[in-house]
Amino acid sequence: MNTPSPDTSPDSPASTVAPTPGVPESDPRAPHVVVVGGGPGGYEAALVARRLGARVTVVERQGLGGAAVLTDVVPSKTLIATAEWFTTAEQGPELGVRGDAPAGERRDLVDLKAVNARVLALADAQSRDIHARLEREGVAVVAGTGRLDGPSRVLVEDASGATTSLDADTVLLAVGATPRTLPTAVPDGERILTWTQLYRLTELPERLIVVGSGVTGAEFAGAYQALGSQVVLVSSRDRVLPGEDMDAAELLEGVFRSRGMTVMSRSRAASAERTADGVAVTLSDGRVVEGSHVLIAVGAVPSTTGLGLEEAGVRLSASGHVEVDRVSRTSVPGVYAAGDCTGVLPLASVAATQGRTAMAHALGDAVAPLKLGRVAANIFTAPEIATVGLSEAKLRERGYRYVTTTLPLARNPRAKMLSMRDGFVKLFAHPDAGVVLGGVVVAPRASELIFPITLAVAHRLTVDDVADSFTVYPSLSGSIAEAARVLHGQSGPNATD
Image (cartoon, rainbow, N blue to C red; front, side, top):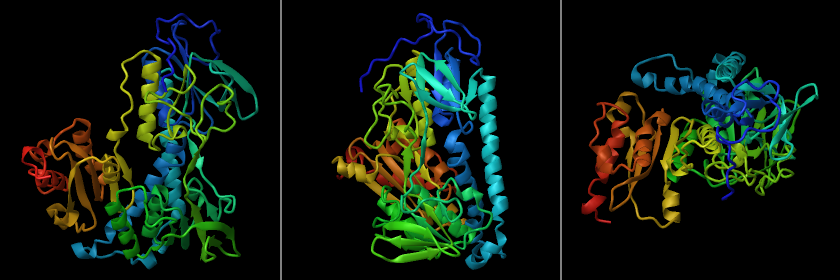
């Protein structure tokens, strides 16, 4: 979209609207930015806008941090961190350490009530930290649900039903998304669950059926299996993580099966209902899978309904996402959007970047359009799967020439010391220039190991640049340099493509 941005720089004419109650006092000529939604896209945008001299109000109905902090990223990764202790302990006997509990006995060692209490306490603490940060920066925080009343006014309804009107020079929509549910599997918060409801459980599920094999489904399936639950993963596709690197997905599925998980490929769930002491999931072919609980992890839907967006002229896609360009502009001048409600890429890091970019653009600061090719992403399974740059599927789809190499993690000396066998490092490079185009890391803490490849992709480094950089010996990161050395000769002037 090429919708022009309004003139909202600090030197633009002052708004004729009277100062809004609750907005920090500042230069009366300063533009007023209203942010609807306090997740990563919203609070990062608020901080940037405040630093650029704007008066800023954040409207949030749940708590600062949004779903990322309260019900999604922070809670799920905290739960997964607990599960990692058991995954690591599996290697104990091989390393000469006794005391690992067999998978069938782990349930007796897990106090899920205590685990979830810690999960929610950490999420709440993070939310309060964000709230305190915004207040220190002079951002006004209003509790309530915000909706547009035209392109330059936000109506806020609080818990009592009272409505307040906020006039704005710039509006940022960061309303996020909510778990997608099935009409034939309505969550009840007890046996049929979305991922936001898992933290209410006080006992570990004996047999958890996970419907959906995308990122969320795979992460929770792996975590609960590690904690000691029997897990059945229902996948409508040929393999788990159908949108990820094929080699990585196949490796992870093999690991899941080797640890005792039941993976049902090409099986679509038609419905789920409660039984006397559990749940029954009926598949589209008539088979019935029984368990104690079922997690519905079939994606998310944008939280854009009933917010007055279409009435204000904000264009939505067929899926209900807010359409934005690379600087987060919507179809309406002065209205921007960031985060999962845009459908660009459902990552907290992308939401934060979109929010910062939107405010820089709206307030006249230097701005760089969002470059998705530089985004690093991670799946917090065991092992983790981290990716950056162009995937092999994209390279083939676009007809790009490339060279690639894959090094098994088991060859790495540090991995041998830690008894790590499952994983690999894969690099893609241009056959002539040698520029690193992308990479995949499958390993414990792959989220940390992907960073050097991210730097290479972002700064167009060559495989020789990576290979010539020193790594600690022994270290897992040494495999990245080794993979780059393997590609020397396959790329550049001596390439044999």
